[in-house]
Each structure stands twice: as C-alpha cells, then as structure tokens.
Image (tube, rainbow, N blue to C red):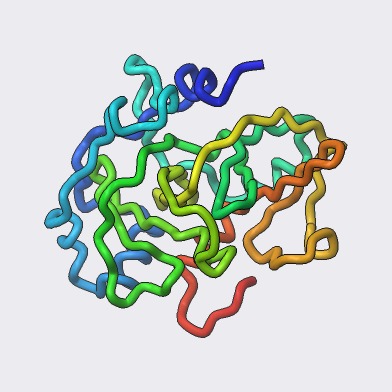
Length: 233
C-alpha cells in the first residue's frame, strides 16, 4: 500500500499556474461579494501571490512536475453522496488540535506548510483569512476554532481542497496517515454515533478500536457561503 506521500506524488494534479482573470466561478464570486463587498474583487490582485514549491510543501505532497494542470471546479455537487455507494474509499487522515480527522483523498489538491494569511475584518472567528494561492482566491478555515473552540496543538500545515468551484484551505496540525477503507468500515449519517457535533462530518471510519471522523468538504463550503442567519441545511 502506498504512503500518502507516494500517492500525492503520483496522482494529485497541481492547480493551474495561470493568473486568475475575471472568469471567477460562481462560488468564488459569492465568497468575494460576501466577505470583500460587491465591487471589491480586485483586492485579490493586491494580495501577494503564493506559489508553494517543494521547500514549502509537506515532503512528498507536491505533485510530479509533469502532471497536467488541475483546473476545473474540483469535486462536484453530489460527489459525497456517490462516495456512499463506493466499495472502497481512500482517506488521508490528519490532526486538528489533538484529534484525528480524515478526508477522501480525491478531494485533496495539495498540502502546504502554513503561510502568511490576510485577515478579513468581517469574517467569523473560524475563518483565518484568505490567501492568493497560485492566483486563486483561497479562504483558510481554522478547524480548531470550528470544531474544538481553538483548543489543541497549533496549526502547521494547510490542506488545500477544491469543491464546487471554490479553492479552500483547511488549517491542520499534522498529516497522520492514509487508510484504504472498505464499505463495511464506513458509517454514514453519524449524528447518533458520536458525542460531539456532527454538523461538519460526512461519516466515520471504523477499524477495530479506531474511530476516525470524516469531514464533509461540501458542508464546510456551505458554511463559508451561507447567508447571515441561515442555518445549516
């Protein structure tokens, strides 16, 4: 079985290196209108562009240089529902605070070392701010704040995902390992299975005494874009 590092080198595509033009996705436009204000989208051009290379990435978690550009809108609507029918799901686990979480490996674009972030005055506490990552507007979520009220080991890395047109960074303490989860080891609809909030969880991975919470990128993106006062659907 490949290590997470080997998988990323061989299989994960690097996002396009092109400068972002006016062709923002609907999700990017909605994010900027909400947090930057309508008419202030040119703020991205004022942010220092970050192009992580191997010396600023988790060793082995950068794609091979010959890979095609990532492009596109990332994982699409209904992607998470399709996972529930899969016979096997590959997961990358990581530490947030002091607890282990996981994401399906196919939604992860890359993992980079923590980089300077521009604060957003109007943003909630669970959003650290934004970065101009390879020319794409990228909000960075503080998972410790969102899931554990800021408790635990400080963040050292950012997991970069792209879902429904929005590039998203998730601040984590460390990448832990990779699991090849079979269908019978996965539990979906976890509200009754755990004693903590399941609002941002897609499911659980169970193996012996091990229990790993699988985060929902879809719900995290919804949390960022939802209107004030709007509850989680």
